[in-house]
Image (cartoon, rainbow, N blue to C red; front, side, top):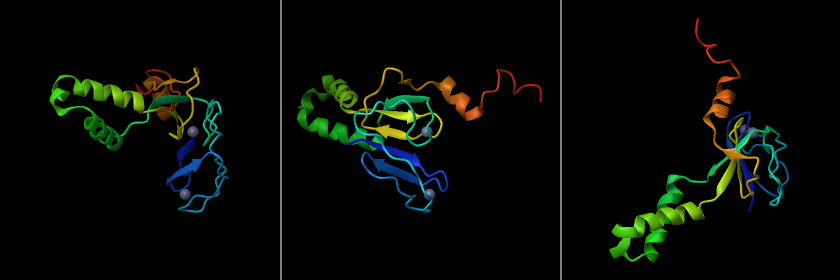
Length: 144
Ligand SMILES: [Zn+2]
Ligand SMILES: [Zn+2]
């Protein structure tokens, strides 16, 4: 199931729209929103929430999922070998199971359940900084 997760531009509530769902207003502050999740097989080349065209991908990973996966994985691996190879295998399983999500540099909207197009690269701190601090030339912050 594909979905887009973004913050309400008005009240910053975390909103989620699933593919196929019609646009609807913010559940918390009722600000109208036209954001819809693209269809599952869509090629994501711009942000579904703010239409920005610079996106990156990252592992859809948080601590809770990680721990759940380790517990689940441990159930299938004999405890006696875990000290030897178990941790490596669990790491590998987690890396394989956890899917990539597409994130917007501009508004941090998360696009979950889509294929990653080749044009989208992993997170780049330089691009990120340009969005956060603006396109100031290097050294512009000196000499105040
Ligand atoms: Zn809102
Ligand atoms: Zn965006």
